[in-house]
Image 1 (cartoon, rainbow, N blue to C red):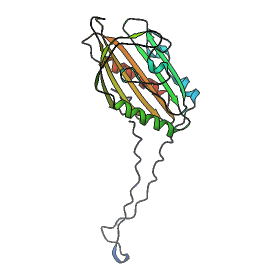
Image 2: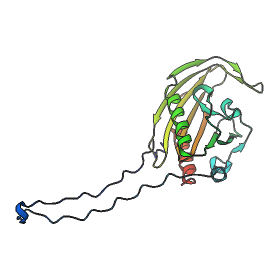
Image 3: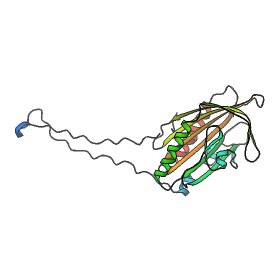
Image 4: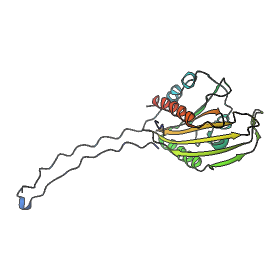
Length: 243
């Protein structure tokens, strides 16, 4: 699976100079003429994205799924223009980035759902600091927890549920990437389709931090594999638009 997952800058290979040394100025049979030093390849410059370019590059509803439509954010973090994390928690953005928040919902009872926040900072240092905060917080989430029922803004109810959380460092060329995989289980008395899988992708490059959350509601014995593959496909498509 393509792991739209810490992206490590390419390692630059420097030329190696090998020179033989003869004694007293005389060449010996083992002497070698000095080889020319090959110039090192210049590292790629850190990209800087304009907010308008980032916004124009974001996925549309048709890119995500034929059955989804844009909706007002219902995810608590996105409602606050914050970064979604484990168990409906939020990470507040640092500084004053340009922020674009979006959410899409399937028209079917179970199907594709997608939320996203794109943060464009004035410079790469500010974006890197924000990504470091995200990495620290998502890797510190508990691996399991019980969340009691609560009323969300707008009057909707989040049923009591049990969550499991697994963070992982991913390798996606050119991008720093941490993924969170979350399984949420509600009581089967509430619904026979009582499991949600959410895939959180946190990526950063240059002056941009991009966070996407893809989720589906599934039957109790379903695995997370199908949901993870779809999230990976969407992230791959998204990052290709921000070269």
